[in-house]
Amino acid sequence: AAKLSERLATLQYLTRPSAGKRTGRNIGVHANVATDLEAVHAPIPVKMADYRRVAAPPRLIVDRFELRRWQPAQPDFADPASVRTFYAAAEAFVCAAVGAARVHVFDHTLRTSGVSSLNAADGASAAGAVLRVHGDYTADSAPTRLAQLAAAGAITVEPAPSRFAFVNVWRSVDQQQPVLSHPLALCRPRSIDYARDTWSYHMHFEDRVGRNLAIEAKAGHEWGYYPRMTADEALLFFAFDSSAADGDVGVVHTAFDDPAIDGAGVPRRSVELRTVALWD
Image (cartoon, rainbow, N blue to C red; front, side, top):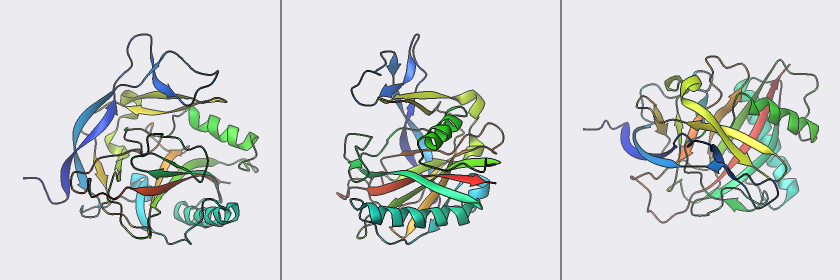
């Protein structure tokens, strides 16, 4: 019998690209469209731990992610002043959590399960939940993204940091219901051989090509999630850390269909804030 702290779930892993192809997708219709991209998924059953009930809950410094209490004022995402206040609260929250000298929020995405597009047109409209096992950066794409953000004036990198990290903050924005559909699952980095089992996922935007991480399915991956997250909780996780050892480039994650709660008829409404933390 399964332990109370875990259950079986099915996750969508990417498969290695076929000959002459690269893993990825085109985002939008534009002149930068690539014709050699493919993204083939395989449904893989995994043991899914309940991180609220495990004997040793994940901790931010050791496991690169952690659930914490956070109760900022609920923002109006259509109001730039309200979003700026929300960003400032998030910057202080992340700065205290990771011990950085300074933190910048550079964007956010609202997500609602059931929406087909995975990319929002702006910060006030919603994208869908990402039901694909992935990491947000590669060892090469993270420094490139940092340079792009600095060049665009979205962040300030002076004085030059001794260390930088992309840290995501994920929380529900539903003030009435807990997360009852497509919760976020995270894989403990200690269970992934990043050098052997990951490769680049290419995202062709109109003005740039981004790369995040595809992961090959392995039996030893340690997955888990926090059931029924509420709006006074937030998940912090390292999407990339320049000081990480052993090729660990960030926490691998995915939304998934939770057989224990999906079908409750309540769409997931969440926000993910993307921040960069800098150490002098």
